[in-house]
Amino acid sequence: MELNFTGLTAAISAFLGIWLGHVSVRIIERNAKTLWQPISIAIVLGLSLEIWSLLTDHGLLNTGLGILGITFLWDALEFVRQEKRVKKGHAPANPSNPRHNTILAEYPFATTIDLLKREPGKQVEGRR
Image (cartoon, rainbow, N blue to C red; front, top):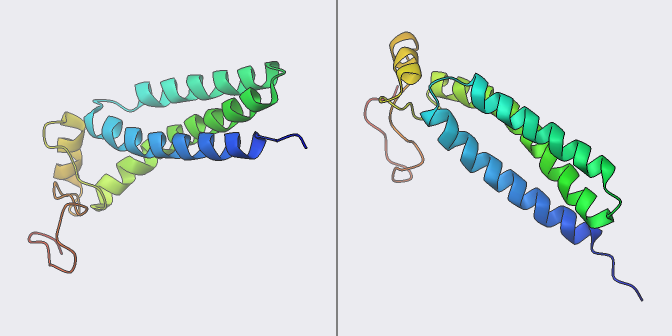
């Protein structure tokens, strides 16, 4: 019986791509002065990985590259969605980022409070 590692490769690359994307989108969006640069980089990386996936004959490699490529393309969309979460107050704004200072001034629900760093069940001051 021959072992097939395609599923394992797909699972590992999906987990790592989603985890890395989630963490990096939050960090990069919080610190980026403009979003067009990280969005452009994510698109170029995603398309490059997808093309590389199509050109390689190795089954495990093209599986991992294809999954990582599509997660980079999805992360390009997530930068915009993360900015919308900041505007709604669902994610904290960075007061040292000029782009976030504009958001804090223009959107009444934007906040610098990180709701993930609070005691469960306790009311957060300054929130409506």
